[in-house]
Amino acid sequence: MWLKITDLKAGYGGKEVLHGIDLDVAEGEIVALIGPNGAGKSTTLRTVTGLTAASTGSVTFRGEDITSRSTGWLVKRGLVLCPEARELFPGMTVLENLRLGSYAVRIASQEYDRRLEHVYEMFPKLADRQNQLAGSLSGGEQQMLAIGRALMSEPQLLLLDEPSLGLAPMLVTQMFELITTINARGVSVLLVEQNAVASLDIAHRGYVIEAGRIVGHDDAKKLATDPRVREAYLGGV
Ligand SMILES: Nc1ncnc2c1ncn2[C@@H]1O[C@H](COP(=O)(O)OP(=O)(O)OP(=O)(O)O)[C@@H](O)[C@H]1O
Image (tube, rainbow, N blue to C red; front, side, top):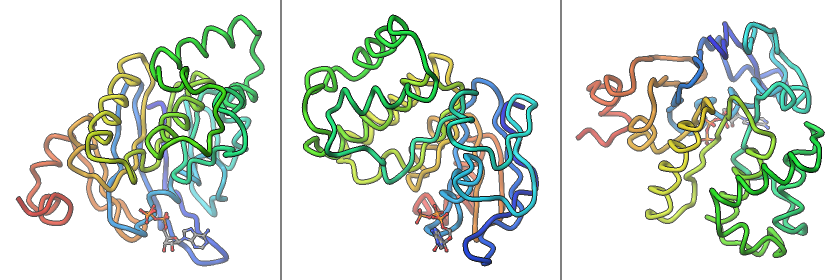
């Protein structure tokens, strides 16, 4: 397994939120992590990427123990989080934000140009607006910029936290198509989403988290037809 999370426990200020998560992502997969508000989806991603400390358990990536490593260290090894809050720099331009995405990996300028071209090819709107301030972009464009910035480091595994949050329905469809495209270009994806229908539709496998525990995992298509999952997350239809 590329990413292997074993018995991971973590929390905030002494209150345990993750009570022993086991989850893995194989090379080339899209894995969806679905569950209700406050279940611990973001905390799982934050703990994997070292933003929240693990109290016990382990995380390995390509066989290497990465538990509680710093974000910069992980980016160099190809594991990148695209967080829910976007964490763009609104007072900096689109181009400056993209440049920051490759900062941790220290690449030659030719390589930087190639990656920038690749991101602009994927998101032509970002090329049109490269000199505009990030804060002046629409919600959907900011989302694209956040993903574009993550792609500038050429991740092998992309952790996406609620990429469809706050997007208009048409953009939601585009966002899920985009994730499929990124995956088809060789990037494995761990996708955290409240939109269970769309995420299970594009995922290979899925996990269900409730109150800090994994309560089910299966092939995404099977999970999408599981009566309990349909009842809880897919509107019972
Ligand atoms: N910085 C924090 N300090 C204290 N408690 C937190 C913090 N962040 C999250 N929590 C708590 O941890 C629990 C899990 O939150 P988390 O954000 O991981 O859930 P989630 O499944 O991602 O939900 P959502 O979809 O609402 O983001 C919740 O009870 C939440 O209140």
